[in-house]
Image 1 (cartoon, rainbow, N blue to C red):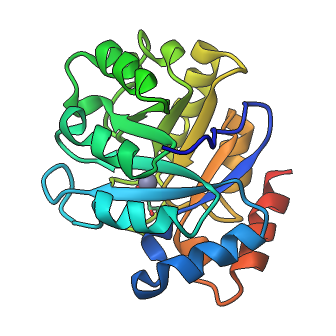
Image 2: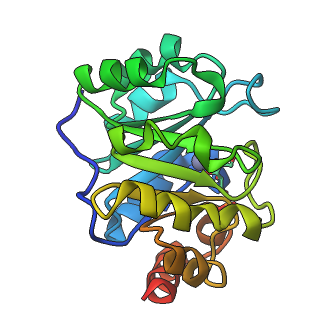
Image 3: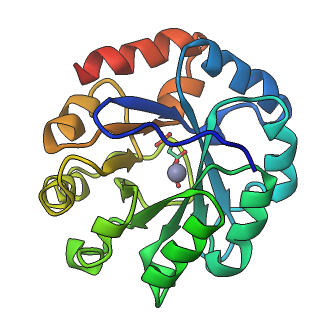
Length: 224
Ligand code: DX5
Ligand code: ZN
């Protein structure tokens, strides 16, 4: 377990998603974004059940931990976060986000994850209404709003889903981060920031560019 923490709310953070990076060169890809001054990297964990795609497990996260001092913002797109989250925490995850759609007792899982030393995020899919997270959102460190159906990078931004950000911001106030994930680029960034998002996941918009550092800068600029 590492002592890195999710940055306190109040700043805009870009969280590059390595889903669109070259998986054969992950350590190098992460070193490049680290040199751009980002504080966190978004790790998309997929199990082939909750989403129709499979990415990486704790073994890969543990190896990457040795090469990076970034906050590992770990997005569990898996049907059994209760079972597997501890393995990702042991591997070096600093923040764990789970999906509300697969957890019956979110309060219990939030407490358990905190007791294991990480900050906690709660994620909702595009079709999941805000009232599904209303009661537990104030207990979290970050809420993750999906603006694509999870599973793949480089999909088209869903503007209707983004509107949920404004309602969630009203519910959680200024001290809890709101992260947005899916189709974030220089065009969509001003929209989600105007709704109250402060944590911007971007995969294709960064790793789809040859110059990843310039791509991160462009998103930061679009957020101003
Ligand atoms: C999608 C993942 C995202 C993905 C975003 O299921 O949760 O984090 O990498 O990719 P882009 O930014 O390309 O839409
Ligand atoms: Zn993600």
